[in-house]
Image (cartoon, rainbow, N blue to C red; front, top):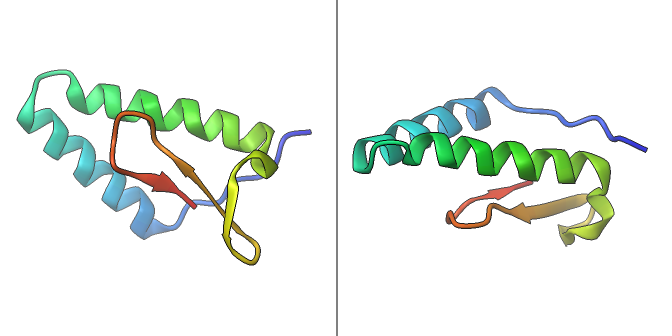
Length: 71
């Protein structure tokens, strides 16, 4: 069963800013960041209960290779 994911305007803005920052540090790194997020979003949407509940009703999926998490 797939779950519905919601994105706040702030989360979208911060993701874009992080992508630009990574790209400014190394060509292609911003794209790697987005690919890592997309993969984790797919996993999160398919099986959110696999991720740690950090506060009641909120789970966190860390982004492999980057110091970010999806809540």
